[in-house]
Image (cartoon, rainbow, N blue to C red):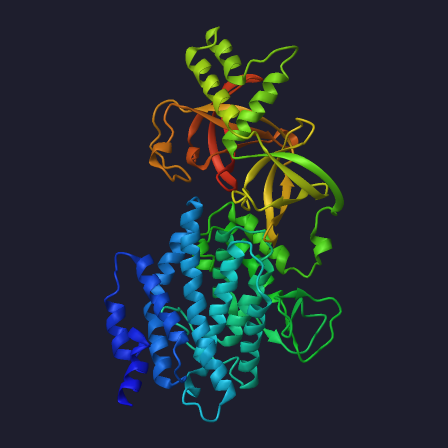
Length: 554
């Protein structure tokens, strides 16, 4: 009989008691966070499968493990967010590890809460309920957020569990009870704060932001959560959004709702007013971090994110916020991605447009202008490009679903399309033509296992490929450098010169080629060479920047 109880206790392994788990966490490999967190998840799975009651002692073991491993989880999340160009294999390993921890720890808290709901009178963990409810709500919110990062649909059951936790907090009158959720938190939060933050972030789960931007908005809501109020009665003059707690989805925009026991209502008036104040403060020189925008926020490109957040929180309906209506229209388009490939394709198209039978590339034309002949180096480069071009598929073919004045919608097979990310620069042309246009991926959604819906915003203005050359070595750091060997020094760089309204010129360049005040000689086959100086970044895309510049000399 005694051996039976001993075996049952051993089944919980290192999470059998508080003393054991404390010693085990201290012995985890500090130099290998990924492996350490993998061990934590493995033991959490064992903990969740153990046939034990939901006792106070087991809850304390869980809470201690959770608190003790927050730094490891945070380090993995930071590693994921700061390495946007990591390989698909590494990205998948990191994402799975992070998601698995959130899933198992939240599943544990959810089990304790469900046991409490089933037997509130006989529970010995009642004093912990507000805290573990806040942790469980944050856990489900994190699971949902990390699925946004991959543009995956959120399972209805996740939303229903999240809604149910908040309903429990309301029913037992602790939804507005402030607790220190984790010791690293700067201030106390309530279950209502955690729930409201998850709801407002759901407006950005539509595939229109990159993970880094979603994370920034979540951090803003961390700092501004006291402005989120959740009401049970609908006021059409106050409330902008509602959530149906009996349905498996996030916030919806109010459209003549009526008060209902399952509905909760949120106003964004205070948030929008605060956001306007933040913009005014930024323009007056206030540091972004002191305004709750986090250390990762950058100007001036950060203004576009603020503008997008303001639009999503505004009272205007989606059709009123859209710059032009979508029209269903089928078609097929050739698509090229990555700045280098786009420049090469544009160069060929520009060379073919030079007059009857002229097949000289822009580089060959430049050589003739400068030296009176085509150099051997340029000839070798052209041969290499031709071999590479012959060995690779020229472009993808996408199926168009709709069109508007400013963009296109496509449905694309998920097979061989993992390169598609929000912010990716692409070139498009009708299948039977070579009338190339520039566009940026602005929205992604997984329709099912075999397809992805993609929204493209077309760039206005005229564009041409140019060559940039920086003579000498520039010691200034580039804007984005994944590889120190990419630092530019006396070499030719392909870029796109974009001429917008009123002859306003901008450059589309690779991030590793940018540094403010860096000088380049810009060469174009259609005009004189000139010396320019780079100014500010106006838009940041996936592996490219839109940069303003000034002309120094011709």
